[in-house]
Image (tube, rainbow over all chains, first blue to last red):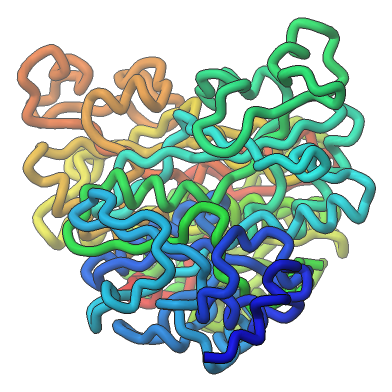
Length: 301
Length: 301
């Protein structure tokens, strides 16, 4: 087999179009994080469920759109090559152009059987996909990070080349059928107090990828029920500008405060808590589906 | 002026169509609660805001659709006689047919100036409405109560001819621009434990009018931060089947549990907390706008 991607994949920024990125994943030529691929394009969280859970999951997203922004789903049960859009003004083929295969086009997948992890970081789910599966695409906050950076407000973790800090909270999701007992998962980016209004304004426009923060300020750590700001459940610990642990700033007259957004880990957490039977698949953390839709397609003006 | 409604209004069940109900309110012939009017028709909460707050309020509803289900809004700033629909598959004129006037067609209104109550229970807001106002219609739970009753699960308060019990909670809304610091307001209907699954299934279909409960069971009283189940902030205190205070059941091996839904008082509370300037109008409690749309128009099958 020809391997035209091999050179390019050592320099992932050469994967410029969404189809470039998906094709490289499909042929196992790009097998790492999709961060930075196809700049300007939306990337999506993936969840694949047995069809009997589809209605409850769809309603879970509709009832909790801030942490669970549903962008698209399979056009019909068992279809892995066509999606319908949940975004006003976008068609399914605006989101994913013909020729994709949701079973192979992400670099890495997770497979769960009867709610237990069966395979971590596998390259495709062709063997696991059945005629009874439905795929859901959930928005991710990469979109607004680009505009924040453009406005001179780059997220700290991108400046320091770390992962964003992600926390469990005690804020309940509105339940939906089998999906009960879920709580918000939040991502956190520290900002100076005086920049919070501008950060809110910029991210507010991205209603389909979590939108404006759900809260901000040091008092939010308690109101969200976060255990320890320096020990996130996912991602890396947050750092202050000077490299100290962010939590250390709290006792001072901090000019930096934590700012919290709804996070796309939320629906995955809700799915894991639901005790589902059968085979569930998802993207591996950081290994997203790159969409043909671009950031400006979802910005509300 | 002819008063063709006068006799009918002494027997409000004769106000069968939505236009009957609106016309009677318009001519000040029906000036009391709209409960029971035009059976089968949707009724809506009304909020009228200066246009500078419209985008933030629209996003508040989009981010919190369970307590704040936005059904329709003015077709353009200053228009009181035409709405656009926010419900898939329904046009504005399916919701309110031509010939209505949002300034007069509710039996009673509230008027706030600079966030302070200016008029309570006035019959119209023709004098207060300006070319800069936008009207929003929010779903109300009357719809699913009819189906619950039809299924042999009538809400307790309807059986006892009381008002539903409504509580403040500590569950935060996702903020939106000027609308910060809001929390869920919930309505409560007690049910037997073994009926909760069926109650959930029935109300789940009414996604545009609060949908399935957000939680249930006695432990929910604490998790919602409700101060005293026997002392609701709005409506009447809840009673057990035998007429005792509902809270008294808790210490026993209760067969009845409280079941909580998102409540349309939530957006009004959020508006009141926001410290808005200018003139804000709303329906008076229980005095809703009767819509041409019927319950089955919004049921998801």
